[in-house]
Length: 368
Ligand SMILES: Nc1ncnc2c1ncn2[C@@H]1O[C@H](COP(=O)(O)OP(=O)(O)OP(=O)(O)O)[C@@H](O)[C@H]1O
Image (cartoon, protein in one colour):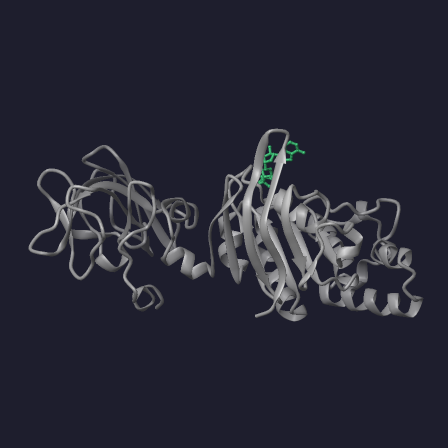
């Protein structure tokens, strides 16, 4: 895959605060890349630096192999779509779509063709005469995307474009953007704090935290093999459960002490840590099982969503523990249960939160 956008050790400070701390990454040609991370991690700043709306402190940005961090935004050949649609209120939809091209002195026939094509792709042809004030949120966002499409950019940059829409429309637009990406085959970089958008839309997710990259990869890879506890906890809802433990090998098998003389034994797995070393066990709510297992818990509440039931339990240690069962679970508040943690789905993190002891054949267990 060719690199459409490449960042090399990009840094940025506001006053004395370094908000981008040396980011290097490659956005592949035609890929849908999502920058995701908690509020303030620097995702918008990173996107704005690619767009040229924000100067970089140091490092390099290349677009199609060409160094461009010194170029003005217009010279970079990118199109940006913001959370606020930024449509011109006094112009019709049609004029909003044409305006940028007219400024660039694109021939009229060419403008007509590009606008008609974009309107067709986005199904807004019937809205061309309306003013922005006469559009719904979803329609406005489509027009904003249309304005990007007509520019025929080298890449699209989206900064939380769906966050002003209501939940239902957001889900619909998510699907539409993925379809648009498939149809145009263009490089897209998309910023969101919403891990569901990242998981459902991305070819490649870049997880950011405090101005640095935590992990880059395809959604399933990050979900099934998070490189650290932060990524493990950030992707997936309900969140992965974390239980503190210590290494306690038994007959050469990897064992994890769970208190009260119980332990979890993981045959065939090992970690490069000595007995007694503290580790954190991670297990996703959909992977823990109620049945014969080493963890004692009491069910506190259940949320029956229909397609799944989310069970909130409390371990003997006092810590909360969440389970997700497909369909409707018979578990009830007050039930005392034993929890099993199936070995292939047990994640282990060392003292610094770095994943350790992964099995190489995880795909076999994870992907059904
Ligand atoms: N113009 C500015 N001056 C000073 N600090 C800034 C400026 N812009 C951003 N910051 C700071 O830089 C950091 C990163 O901000 P940025 O907007 O990139 O984060 P973000 O991940 O996009 O967050 P959010 O999801 O809340 O939009 C934050 O700590 C923010 O306060």
